[in-house]
Amino acid sequence: MPGRDLSAHERRPVERQNVKKAFGFGVGTVLAALLGGGWSAAVQAQTMDAALARAYAGNPTLNAQRASVRATDENVPQARAGYRPKITASADIGASITQSEVPAFASTSPYHASVNSRLAPRGAGVQVTQNIFDSGKTRSAISQSESQVLGARETLRNTEQNVLLDAATSYMNVLRDTAILNLNRNNVEVLEEQLRQTRDRFQVGEVTRTDVAQAEARLSSAQSQAILAESNLKTSVARYRQNVGAEPRSLAPGRPVENLLPRSLPAALNQALANHPAILAALHGVDAAELQVKVTEADLGPTFGVTGTVQRRYDSQYFGDNRLSASIVGSLTIPIYEGGQIYARTRQAKETAGQRRIEVDTQRDTVRAAVISAWGGLEAAKAQIVAAQAQVEAASTALSGVREEAKVGQRTTLDVLNAQQELVSARSSLVTAQRDRVVASYSVLSAVGKLSAQTLKLKAAAYDARQHYEQVKDKLWGTQTPDGR
Image 1 (tube, one colour):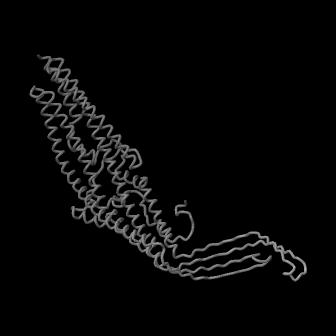
Image 2 (image 1 turned 180 degrees about the horizontal axis):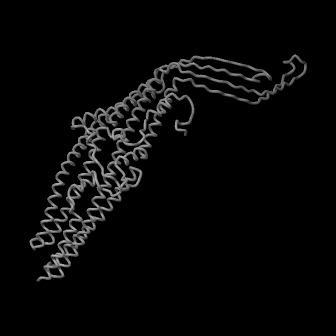
Image 3 (image 1 turned 60 degrees about the vertical axis):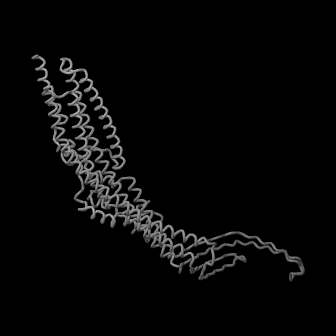
């Protein structure tokens, strides 16, 4: 049948063209899409560093934690106020009317006498109270507040790590889901052409109705996968907007940060246990809790203070009188028994300190597990990339062979469809593995406590928590914050 052979011959170039369109690029193209080169056609693509810099500067979670640190800074001047004098001023004014009846026998006058007095008593005074000794309560409170500040800074550093890791993950998720969506859309296009060709062959009697149904089923499945991939991309875009603070526009390829990582797992563990902000924050929490014990115990000790008062009074007893008084008094207070409240508070503070020490061990275990997990994830992602590359190459070769064999009747339409689906799955696995490698490298950097704007050398103004502390630690008065609020 010459006409049938000619029809098949004319279809073969179309088949090869569509296969090349969807699956003919090499493994390097998928890697370039995620690692460097040609993912976006836009000249001005948004880079990973730019996205992380934006998150560092404007993420609400990070800014809220910075505000929390600034609020904690104010504990220091509050504690230092215990060494400073307390000055109060008072003034009063009033009116008094006194009417007295004096009988004759009680008076020098032989007659009954009546005495009326109208006064306007008034006055003003100043009182100064100075703490001299408080059994070390103020000293312990200052040290405690400084430990709280240091702990808050480490908590901020840990929050910065989490925000940057979330932003990097969101960035790579958008790239991954975009690549997978493109693969699925291309797969739909090829399957549509495959179905059209199968129907043409069915019309001329080359294949059966079963082959057409198999092509239709596979196309419907591919369309469903494309819809799912599009939904996943929308979710990733929403997460990106949440973590970075902007819509993803023409994202440039992402790269791992393996050059910033320790050389081995033991080195990573040593770095993490020595420098991870979660552990350091917990240690400062122990210091603050132990100092709280001393602050509470100080209420059981004696206190000594001096109070000076200057006061002027007018019309206090007689109309027109004017009195000036001044005094300075030292007072010693020794608590004897206060119902057991302070003893209970002291025991409670000791139990809290014990809890904080246990929490340090918990944080160490958590960090150790996170480092091992992240390191293993990075090694696994590297191995998966190698395996996925081999899988893609093999699946691509298999698809080409199956198609050629199908042309001479040695393979069925189902064999072609299965080989095509295996190649799509292999490429999706490669994209996912490459994304996992980048994210895992950031996870390891976070697990060892080094994921920061300074380490990544982001082009963003560095936030220095010490600046606000220096501005307020010795501030004596004023309700305005250093930034003018």
